[in-house]
Structure formats: structure tokens, C-alpha cells
Length: 145
View 1 (cartoon, rainbow, N blue to C red):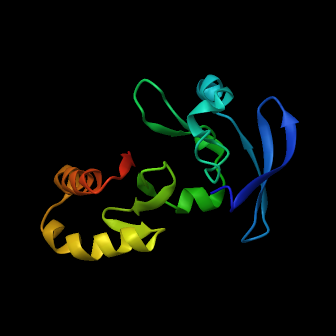
View 2 (view 1 turned 30 degrees about the vertical axis):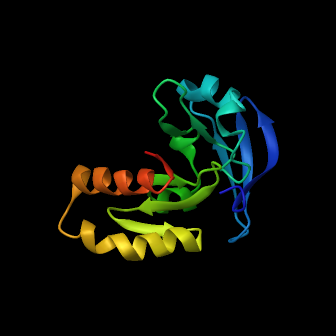
View 3 (view 1 turned 90 degrees about the horizontal axis):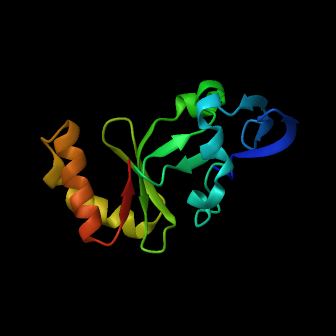
């Protein structure tokens, strides 16, 4: 998402103006008050140079958080990402959006998806998630919910 949204102004008090590279829109966002400490700790995304500048991972739970969720840009409101898939080097390889739509960012993940998708048909909810995560983990990927 760093390729989409970039800081263009810092207004203080954890308020920023971000520019959307695709639409040209500029929107103001503010770090959620309960996520300021998480936002301050940039170590959780140190290995993800293309991550959204507001994404953080909680070290205890390993859950991903949008630190500007309450004021997030419109594009983010329309874009629903349930699972992030990282390759063995920690780089984004793809993401699962909506209920079961995979958006592969690498050809390798796309080929894996083509092979395993029929085995996931008929599963839903957490059964689908668990089965796909097991397949991805066995193939050397790391999945963040």
C-alpha cells in the first residue's frame, strides 16, 4: 500500500495528509488514540518496505492493525483484506480479500492457488481459512490474519 498512499504532510497531533497515487486524492487521517503506541513502534514493519505507512503488527498477538482505522482513506474502506501472505523472506506474496478471493502478487503463489483451489471448494469460514493456511505454511509462506 505504500505504492498507493504516501505522506504528503504531517500536521501534528498524529494527523497526516496522505496522497493516493492512483486517484490523485489527498485525504486527512489521524492515528486512532488507542493505537498511538503501536504506531510509534515501527519495528513490526521494518522488513516490509512496501507496507502501508499505518500498518503495524502487535508483537504479542501477531495481529495486524490499521492504526488510522477510524479515519482511514476511502480506498481502504473499499478494500477488504483478510489474510496477508508473505514469502519466506517476509515480502508480500499475496492477500485474501472478501471471503475467499486470492490476489497473488507472485506467479509462484498464483500457480499454487491454481493447484489447490479445487481442494478448498466446499469449505467455508474458518475451515477454509485453516485449510488454506495449512497449505501455504507447508509451501513455505507465512500468513498474517
